[in-house]
Image (cartoon, rainbow, N blue to C red; front, side, top):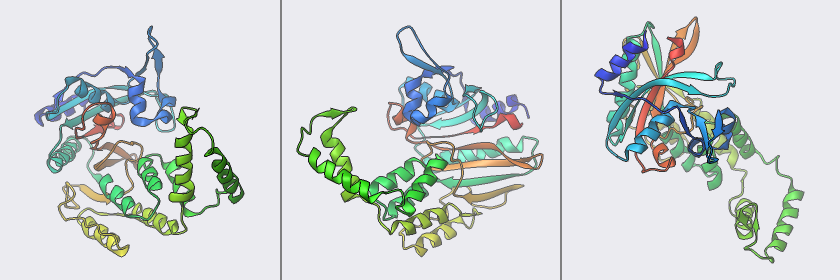
Length: 346
């Protein structure tokens, strides 16, 4: 299937093709993804010592262009181009070909989520692949689940924030499962030191933070929001949830039963997901809780569409809702949803 044919599908679906910039200010990338992403950037400084980078992700360039329009109107865009990231295990080349389509100002979530998923299915049906599997999930379910747990607030926020960082996420769960990383002698010594520091000048600054803030954080960790032995149950619930995978038509009942089992007041309605049937003309649809964990900005519905290539499963399309990204990059709180094609396997 040629990319030109996909562009025609998107045009007929009302998506306007746009050209994107090739560079962006580095701080706009790091605002969204944190310093951990810096290692993948091709960055440089201009004559005014402002740092720029080659675009590492075209959805970021698309959001930047939308912000520049200074609007909150519903806008449907598509684009084709190249992104640039230093090599790691997930990409064989520093040049990543991307085709994406997005709806900004997406205030009707149900309608627009469904449109993105259905547009993705249109693209699949025009491809050379005969069968596919759609995996659907929703970050809202995971966030509500975590908020219902008895974990300390700061740990709940950490778990939600670092869901996309698999290795670090596992470290968090392991720490919450036991307290073997805590040395009681060091903790007691730190508490004595903290009591002495409270007698000093609390306005004095250390590494950009004043002493009052440092001591407040210390009190939070050691007195007001400490880890408890009940955490093991909560971690068990998280791990069990992340193993749930079932036909989409059964998902509302299975999820509601799961939450009832653990006395959580969470109910998933039958019309919650944009697709409600399991099999649609060679398309198998599943609810899969543990997907799309390489991207940190999904806030709601997310999905991927997988196909078999040489007897191996590959992601053809993936996407989801990213309602906070535009605000995170310094503009208004405007909801959005979109998807991208893995053109390398066409």
